[in-house]
Length: 561
Image (cartoon, rainbow, N blue to C red):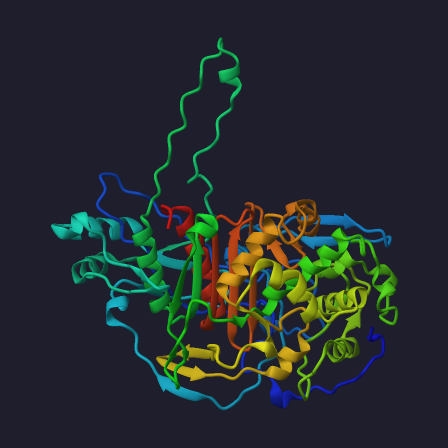
């Protein structure tokens, strides 16, 4: 096998910097349009849960050497208390991981984006969509609040507008061949507009799990002398599938999203895939259901799974130290596999872009080795370098490249048809072009293949929303690693970052990524039954997080899709 221990220095060039923040989760305050479902007339008002906005957690996290003060904005939506979990390691030190509260996302600062020439194309917002949305400016302040449409008034307007045919037929929102039609009656739009009023409230609610009927104890049945408890009433879903799909269509249009969205609240059998907008505006190519997008940081969950496969096979343990593979890294004897998987290794690294594309794993690993810093500080600090080193460990233990291991151990067994290393995406496939939208203008961005070539194991993988859902659903249900292996990889579902995934206190998981002005987000339950996968080629990151949380709540309160 080829040795990767030699340190090869490759100079980074600022001329090839991507136009948007590279591969990590980051936050910004954006203008957000919030849409609530228009419900059918009801005799009793129903209260809405307000989705909390996801913003970066900065409290208690170390500042890496390449961070700047302007890159660590914290929202009041994330000022809820945090706990810490201290993990002992065999290397003799403890590792502290921060517990993310429900609805929080963790972001890491990144290098400043470089400016580049862009192609502009004017776009216009649908007037029909504008009538049913409230536009809110999110201030860049630690005391920012989310403003949402007054739900009670919106419902009253819906009831007033629900007459004749509308009383028996909800506003149309249908799926044809994976494409969402975005039609709504003028009467319901007018009524919704007349009832729209802004009410300011703190965005801090979490996903409710009470929409599912609770199981009852069987003790009464086994003891006839004990009276049986009263039956738990079945809680009816708040929204129909049609209402939820209509609302999601409105959210996407109002916030100028382009991309592909997968939804399910019934596992693989309930999957719906909705493409929005264009993959390439200049060539008039629409986004599609099976289009492969860059996964960015979502790839870390794939690398983590392949490491766990090696652990399951007895070739590695969580306590194996980095010194076995890369002894030249300072403090390698005190860095474990567990710490690499959880970003607690003490390794830090910016995100330099190589001056030319790297052509194989050895070059990508050598590039990382020449740019990382090992600090021996084992608190949580996000760094792509951790997962590139893990990819190198996979190479060393198997004698095969990362892409060969990916094909053999993930792609082929799961039957994934639209998952590729960045330089293997078929030429005849739809390639999403990144865009940004601002003040009525859509600006074309470029993808840095030089950057992608350096992101081995942490951001050089493309996949469709369907393939990525298949992977995560298979992972959490014990079909990629053993069930015990998944528990080990996930650190027994403690509410921390483990193995490429954020596990949340409410029993759900979340992963987000941003690379080359393309964004990826997965939110779902740890059994895979409820999930949302959103890959976007035109979006704003904090807006995407906010809408992702809204969709998560909608799915929990919606009849089976």
